[in-house]
Length: 295
Image (cartoon, rainbow, N blue to C red; front, side, top):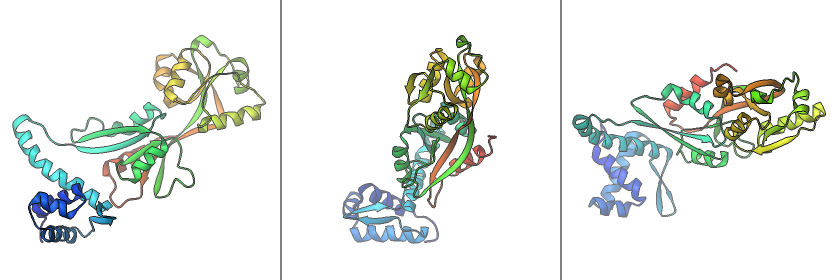
């Protein structure tokens, strides 16, 4: 087979959808043996096994998933040709990004900015917990996951953690608080604080700093979402330990100001990918660009 045969791709797509040769052959009105031969010819042409048997089902391999995406794209292009000529619409690539639900929106936008607005690309952004997102990444349903913590021992198998940026943590407060402290200890003794919950790495480092300073802070609120932490700080509820990227808009608008930097505390941002043979080139480009951000 010198070139790809569209019939082979059509047969392959039907088997992938059905997960069963008999049902796929019935839908295509061909014999099961003929269908099996066509799939084997396609595998020989591509140089990869496209299916593996799990119980009674045929399940796509990683190469099979890639082949299915491309096969669908090939047939979609036929429809797009008509759509383009008739109404000026074309097809886009898809970049599938997962982001930790509590992750800074500013960081997410900064990461995605180089590809936003590209006419050939659609970005699908999904939020969730780290466990949920890494599971979806392992199933190859995401191209990259953005987070602020590398997976712990036992969860990192097969995952690659690309460190993108590291930001120091400072106490930020609304101008209405009129906090004039020049040291962390002074700020923490004179003003209440809004803290992330104990699940946050920032919280663990903050608690350790307070122990070193022999300070017991007055905690006025605990939240598990950076966006809410930022909003409560704007309301002058208390001081909040945050990286500057989270409150960039507020700093520009003057609704928050940096009071004092917290020594030894920082937040690190990562892009996670799964070890796979076929990586998303767009995700790789974005990771490469972000890895050159200044710390």
